[in-house]
Amino acid sequence: MDKLKQAREIIDEADRGIAAMFCKRMEAARMIAEYKKERGLPIYDGDRERAVIEKNAACVPDPEIRGYYISLLQSMMGLSRQYQSRLMEGLHVAYSGVEGAFADIAARRIFPTARHTGFEDFQAAYRAVEDGVCDCAVLPIENSYAGVVGQVMDLMFHGPLHVNGIYTLPVTQNLLGLEGASIREIRRVISHPQALGQCAAYLKKHGFETASAVNTAVAARQVAEAGDPAVAAIASAETAELYGLEILDHDINESATNSTRFAVFSRVESPAGEKKDDKFLLLFTVNDVAGALAKAINVISDWGFNMKVLLSRPVQDKAWQYYFYVETEGDATSPEGRRMLALLSEQCETLKIAGHYAREITLKGGDDA
Image (cartoon, rainbow, N blue to C red):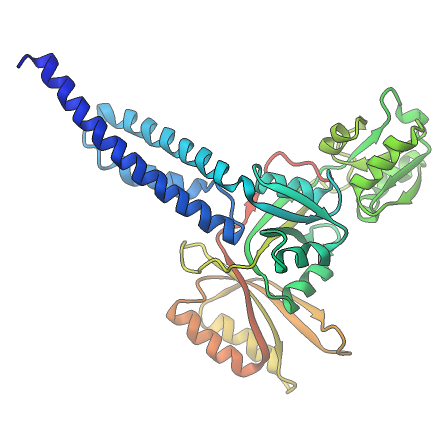
């Protein structure tokens, strides 16, 4: 047998093996898509892909062909994401507001291939997931300028859904007007009260009158529908494109570090302990005895868990009673975590783990809406 024929037979045999293993790999990708859809998790996981490439590249001893193998892995991962995207096109994501609202923008960045539906308020979006109408909900939990979103915190405390991810959307506010309008013509600016507050110095400098809207996307729609060149809205660049408006001025919010944090809520809990940088959310009320809160906080820290956030909220329908929200680093299912929770429950009237997630992800390239 000549060398060419021998080489081609080796390649044919290798290709058959690769085809079989490719089918096996794509079946695993299908299982991952189902898992992520149930829990409202995004398709792309950069940390996981980098770890897989690093680990598997070490299996190729020849440095000359190792780079080609890495390219093959990257190509297969791209195909896997495409396959998962097609399988997850049926993923139905709820958010609060109308198309172009900042929650809509966040939802589309987290789940770009999903179907997105806006609801009239936070509770309606949450209930849509609870009732099975949608698979998950993307809701704001905190703004760096305006503070926590109390209504969503209350849903987290009282409701049955689980938080499986937290994402940060940078906020950039823009002045939007009709096509051909100029700043000199503007007399009145419409937006959500938070956006108006974020741009208060700019609005005062120009002497604009202001009016409130339900959210910034609604404000932009009102400007587009009114057709008055003297009226403008504060909203995102994406919203300007959506409603056919022109950006009259960029980056008009006072704080350059303004951002909103979003949580993804799902009916199915994501398991803890999958990554070394795991975090979990604790919600609890303490016993009505002296020092109960201090003891509860000490229990968490004594067992080596770092509290990144500690907030309090009044309990609905119970005057002068409060629940506490804690974002904690670590694995609550570890032996230390289980012991900590057991001791913490002794100091608490109610105790709930609202969710587990890995590191918080910043959604790049985002204007607020």
